[in-house]
Length: 75
Image (cartoon, rainbow, N blue to C red; front, side):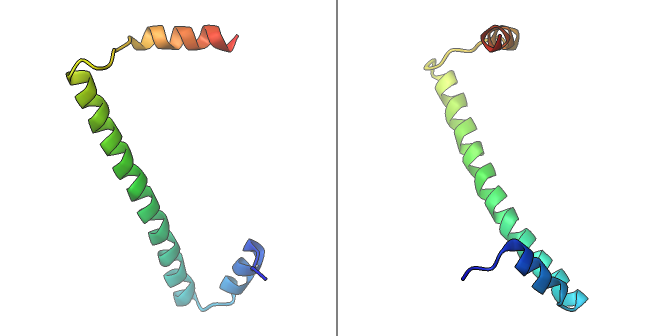
């Protein structure tokens, strides 16, 4: 049976302070790698969109026009 978050937290609280700190570092590192891969994917997407714009394959819109249309659609 899988442990619940509450069970894991309870077990973690029983660790010595240095062990809790080490566990926290491992958990934070796992989040950082996830964020890093997302940031990398966004960077690639941005580069692809800019290149498509530079080649004339996409159209640009003024932000004011986009926001005005979004407001009108949300009503």
